[in-house]
Image (cartoon, rainbow, N blue to C red; front, top):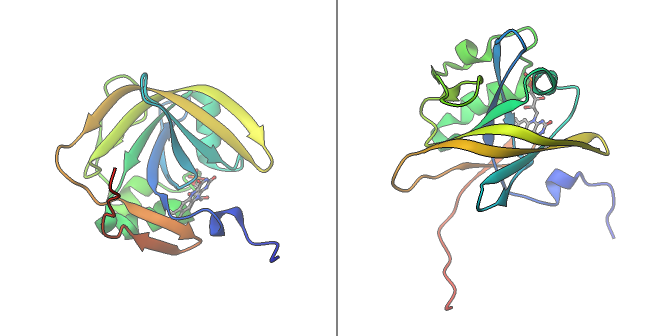
Length: 170
Ligand SMILES: Cc1cc2nc3c(=O)[nH]c(=O)nc-3n(C[C@H](O)[C@H](O)[C@H](O)COP(=O)(O)O)c2cc1C
């Protein structure tokens, strides 16, 4: 048995999110995340795993809110910028050319052009190994009608397009 491959190379593809957070003073940041999963239908809950060295994590500690924005395939370059630089010293919104929209219930902004935007409040932050699992309750959702094709992540700088739908006789 081959050992030593990263978990991200074993469980893929994973939908990518651009997650926004805010510092105590209200300075917003955005970063890319693919360790992301839905947790509950009703009420809606969403979880993601974050390395606590991320600037986004210190924002989560200062203001326990975040917005999950789901970008489409055409935002690949922006996703890469947001996932390869830290917001500690960079304004990634302007660097990546992202337009923000004010959220309704939380401080971190939404990202225009993302057809799914979920405003969340942190309800759990628990360390597992080298990441923290963050579970958030969705307090407001903004969802465009129609089909959309999210971008999926493999590992590192490798992404995948969503392929054709497969339907099973049920
Ligand atoms: C597509 C993609 C997915 C990523 N997924 C995660 C993730 O799920 N968890 C994590 O901690 N970092 C993830 N990263 C790395 C962070 O996005 C990266 O470290 C970023 O620079 C953190 O920014 P910040 O310091 O402004 O928070 C991912 C990067 C990319 C490009």
